[in-house]
Length: 140
Image (cartoon, rainbow, N blue to C red; front, side, top):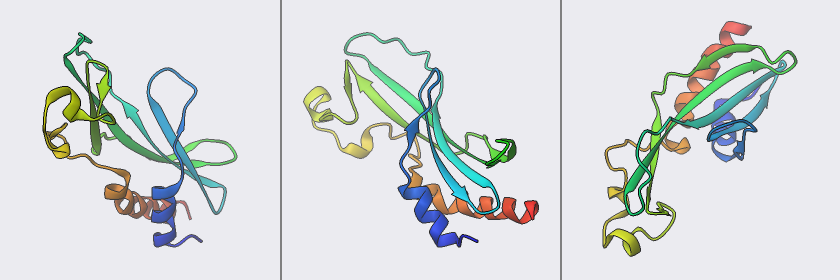
């Protein structure tokens, strides 16, 4: 059986892969013992902002995770509550990954999407692991 620290490390280091469907959905699959797989991913919420050149557009993402049977792919437990989120902004084709200062002036990196808690995977990996272990206790 996997131990908590090992699961946390796998949650943090397993690479995300883009799902082959419509939208911005990325997932990582972590195979566990007893024919179970943990899926951790994020999804972009629908955006109703205009995409005017030079205007800032903010994209909101939420984390989710689910425990599935690796043979049948049945969902055993899931957390789709949208409790953990992060955002990225795009200003006239320039995103958070570009040099923001070149577009909007000298601002601190933490001021971009500052209204969001910015739940990165390292911030929530222990929470995910704790919930997964509770689920595993219920599945026997």
